Amino acid sequence: MIKKVMCLMAALVLVSACDTTGSNEGEGGANGAGGMGMGKGGVARPGTQEDLVVNVGDRVFFELDQSELSSEAQATLDRQAAWLKKYATAKVTVEGHCDERGTREYNLALGERRATAAKNYLVAAGIPAARISTVSYGKERPAVVGSNEAAWAQNRRAVTVVAQ
Picture 1 (cartoon, rainbow, N blue to C red):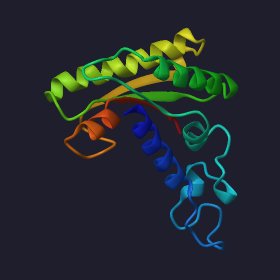
Picture 2 (picture 1 turned 180 degrees about the vertical axis):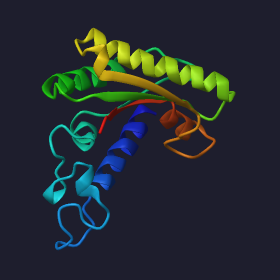
Picture 3 (picture 1 turned 120 degrees about the horizontal axis):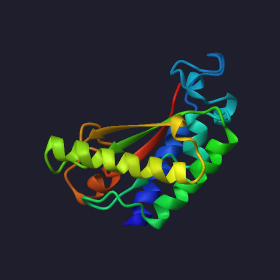
C-alpha cells in the first residue's frame, strides 16, 4: 500500500514538473508555472514550494483516525527541517487534512491535531515556532476524490506550504 502511495506521489510530482508551454512564452509560460517557483527547463528554484515538493517532500500521511507520526513521516519532516534551516527566512503553513469519513467537526479537529503534530516535530527539530502556522481543512480539500481506501489514504495528510 505504501509503495502504491509513493508511486502515485512520484507520478504527480513528475507530471506537475513538466513544461508544456512554448519556448517564447517567457519563463512562466502561458500557465504561469514560472511564477510559482519553476525556472527555465522545469527546474525548481531554490527556496520555493516546488523546491520543497521535488527535493524534500511536502506531505506526510496518517493512519485512519490517527495524528501520530509514523517513522516515514518523521523522516520526511526531518528533511523539511533541514530545508527550513537552509532557507532560514522561509515561513510555512502546515495544513491538516482528513478523508471524507466522519463529521465535519470531527475532521476539522483531527486535521488540526495532524497539523499540530507536524509543527511540533519541526519545532523540536529546531525550527522556530513563529515560522510555522497551522490550519485544518478537515475533509474539505481532498487530494484525491474517491470513496475507497486508496483515495482515503492520500487524503489523510499534513501538507507543508511555503508562505508567499
